[in-house]
Length: 173
Image (cartoon, rainbow, N blue to C red; front, side, top):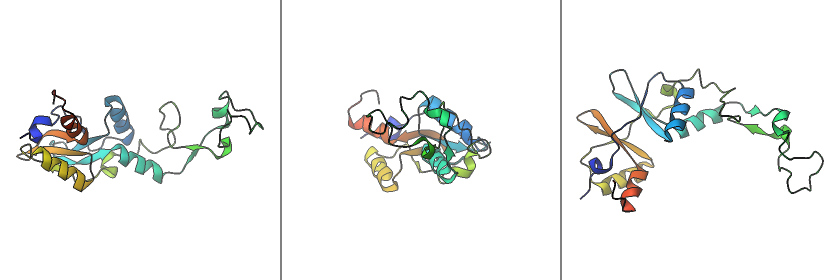
């Protein structure tokens, strides 16, 4: 029987409390991951923060209107509404939460830390937990990842994707 220890990731990417949301977004983007544990200075797990938390934060912020210049050169001819290349939305009504070029300009991501948006409860599992129990745990909790803790120490992280790899028969897991 396979257990969590068999499939968990032991190279853990985490952030410290006090990390800004801008820094978090950069880490998640660079690493191609959707969430990380938040640790204090003693490496104690304080919670988990994810892209979903960032989206919730952005949704609470006022919308940022796009400048008219954004639309220049995109193939939209003014007054040519019947043209299949026309856009459905008029430039004056367009908004973006994250303006182009990866910029977070206009959002308070430098002033807000991960501590303020994280889920303060880290869903943790024991490394000896059976894989089927892990699947049940993730489904019941409606979560995508669990922190693996042994004797109070963070030893790994396991995700729904790790479970899918096992189910698909990936021998490298």
